Figure (spheres, rainbow, N blue to C red):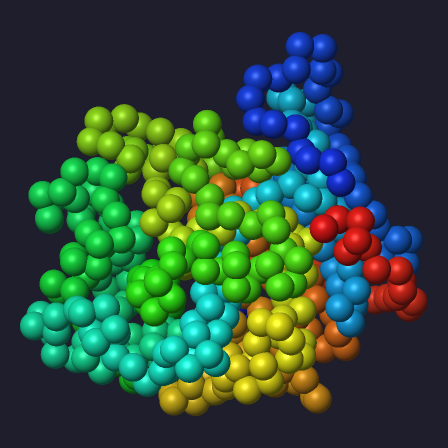
Length: 416
């Protein structure tokens, strides 16, 4: 998605009723008081995490947020947070409300690729040019871009040099003389016609476009559309049923999906009218983001799916899990982390911590699998923007919480 906080990403690994439908304010509803209200379950022994979230959203004026925590695979906290300063009505956020999760979509796409490899239908060394029939005329180095290099952001695209292809709708439309909205094929045609920014495999540079290509590989190899393959092959076996690819407009919101906040506007990318719209509603094309950042989920869904990586199961075997956290050909960073397949990874004593963050206009998300069987997902309906407080404090605040006694009751049956 748009630029992720490097500070947040690199330091983090160290250490149910549906929501009200979006729309007009109910006729007799009183505005919420200027405070944080909560829903769901947070045992007293985990009050430290609950307080971190309450403080975080109130300090930043975040109207909707969620937190879900598992301990050794059991759901021990599931919470929705709603903040209103009294100036507007905000529907109650529940533990099963849906949020755009932005780049937390990447480990899902990586899992889909690894499942195809596991099933003998795909090779990690296969070139993207061969798989998708792409021409390397504009840059012969494109033939060196393999599936594994796409997974590990080693493909040769640098958004700081040539732009992020997922956010260049107007540029691509003009360059190809193609009407808006553009689609995946247009983005690929535009990018394939331009040289790479560095030699594939020489360095890691975060690339949304690389994951767009992985989504198309999933479709080509599986013979199914990307969303259907993921829901059928990855989600269904572990009981995740709510997750969908999101839509661009507020009027297209899924049942139970929160509304998104941003101070920015942009010309719509959904047609050629030039209409200025809220950035989060029509300023980017959500379906185009699918494999790199298009999923909508609850925090409960995310920690449920994260159990896939704890041990071999119906989705991945132990070999596939190991491949997803393996060190890349460029080795480990000077700070001790590396990017595996859809996860940032850090070695701590006796454990590999894995984590990722996501952000787009109206969205900030964070998911971490840490030592001692502790996994959490935190979702928010706005991200850090000009004039807001630093969002990077979330991870260190969560890591600083001390728990003397963990609950043993599993809340998953209540929220799935």
